[in-house]
Amino acid sequence: MALIVEAVDLKKTYMLGKIPVEALRGVNLKIESGDFLAILGPSGSGKSTMLNLIGALDKPTAGTLLIDGVDVSTLNDNQLSDLRRRVGFVFQFFNLIPRLTARDNVELSLSIADIGKAERKKRAEELLETVGLKDRIKHKPAELSGGQQQRVAIARALANNPRFLLLDEPTGNIDSKTAREIMRLVKRLNTEKGVTIIMVTHDQQLAKEAKRTVQMFDGVITSDVVN
Image 1 (cartoon, one colour):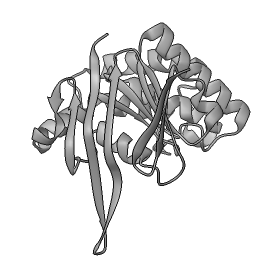
Image 2 (tube, rainbow, N blue to C red; image 1 turned 120 degrees about the horizontal axis):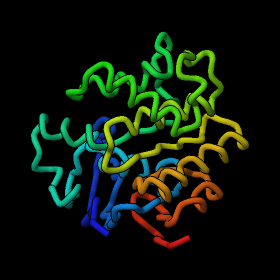
Image 3 (cartoon, one colour; image 1 turned 30 degrees about the vertical axis):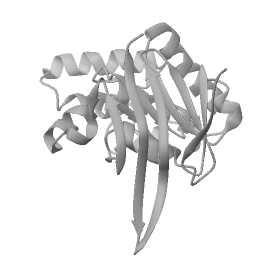
């Protein structure tokens, strides 16, 4: 398996006024293509900071973070933007545009690519079918349940054939039954489509659905186990 992410003694310090806050305090982690990794930990453990760094939304203070063998700290703003386009983000609060249909929300993420309108429409519909929303493509977010909105968000994240999906508390805003349905979809994407998944959660039961669980506490990894 190809190594997609490698963190070596990764550190991240934020300034809270004049007070330094160490969000990451020397993290070492390797993630291979096809993996399904859950990063588990309580609020303040550093897991969301780790996700932001892997998604190139932020840069480390010290240490090395390699994405596909490239040191993120050496990239300029344009190169970081290119890297972000190769990452699929799925957030707790869906972040769909209310006035757009499900298809239009997915199509929007394809508009930055050099793809014709007819092809964008076709790909958006195929992705919505993949996530089980073939009969909801013309519905707007307000006409969809929370679980259906999250499925649209996953389809949108998959639109540009990302190297991996980053899921930030993907079931935190939906009920437990719907959460199980979303996790079945995520597992299917991993096992059948070979999509690499990196998921942040504070839910131990959810973390067990992954192939591997990394536990974080106070900015360090305390355990790394195969489920």
